[in-house]
Length: 126
Image (cartoon, one colour):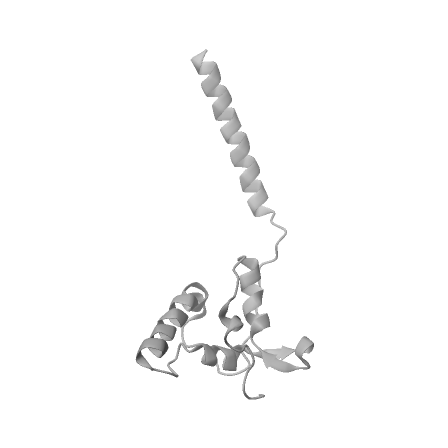
């Protein structure tokens, strides 16, 4: 009797494992492809590092700015906006970084709160 329950439990586990792995492979959510930066040849760090650690860089820069008064380092939000801003049709062609950020953050289901205080618009046109 114990063997029968063990066998049924094993079969259920295999079934759920198979279903979940096939679902993960057939996701209908497209992988993001954000626009290339308009300025500069390369980012301040390799793209793979920026994808993974950009929030830590921005938070460290925020702490330096707020606590020590250090502005303009290579990880400043303003630097990101100046390079990655692209024309936004909804804003009459004004350069904004919201589309660039939203591409990956929507994919990852992450809320962007930077621009509730900071502007996402570039100061200068290209």
